[in-house]
Image 1 (cartoon, helix red, strand yellow):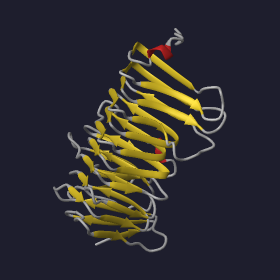
Image 2 (tube, rainbow, N blue to C red):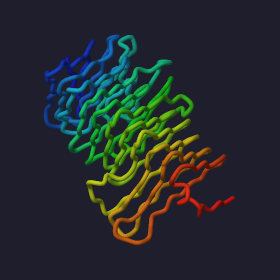
Image 3 (spheres, rainbow, N blue to C red):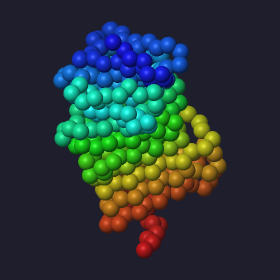
Length: 332
């Protein structure tokens, strides 16, 4: 049975799946801002149909969530899917998927996703088309693997955060890109593969490693990537500004990682206004090989944008674009 806690409407399910061609829609009354659904059983969720809601939808299954090729979203708000064990609220209340632990049905906004397992459940996207028209889309789980398909939050923010062990991921429903991770040494993998397209007004990722192989990561205003370990971009992947949408104010791309390898791929930002945005890379090692490039420019101005690289260990550049980096300036 659902429980109404003011602006929050709570649902609990032992198991939850949406079969191919089926539709599940969470209805709510006026005044409900957040619909919060937890899975208390021991089975992952498989969603291969349409999932809808009349408000922001928070979906928690600690065992894992898989979206199939027929999965679609019809949500009038934002969508947070997570394999966290618990959801904490701004007033200190906590909702857990473990029925052996007391939960509180709060009226406050969700504050953080808590992971208590040594191996959090994974989130898989298999050629799904998940679109949020007017809101944010967030995947917060263990390892996240996106194989083909589209994740689209063009009018909001697209976020991915991966935890590999007990951790806590903090969110702000008013500024959801500003998520933080409690334990940076316990982060998992994010893999974007097989021509998957991820796009949002802002796009942010937080993980232990990030692999983009034949993938597209596009944003209209900014991209922020924070990786504790290695980031690999290969297979003619493209990370940068959405070329099919114009924005007056853009910030560009910001990448922090231990190692960044760009092979036969492009990280770029081309701005529409006269002043191009900036690509900032802060790493220990940077490797641009076999045509891997970093590029910033302005579409209507002769002056290019800025590519700022801080590499504390080494920079390796090889391949046909090497001659364009002959004027790199070293600052100590």
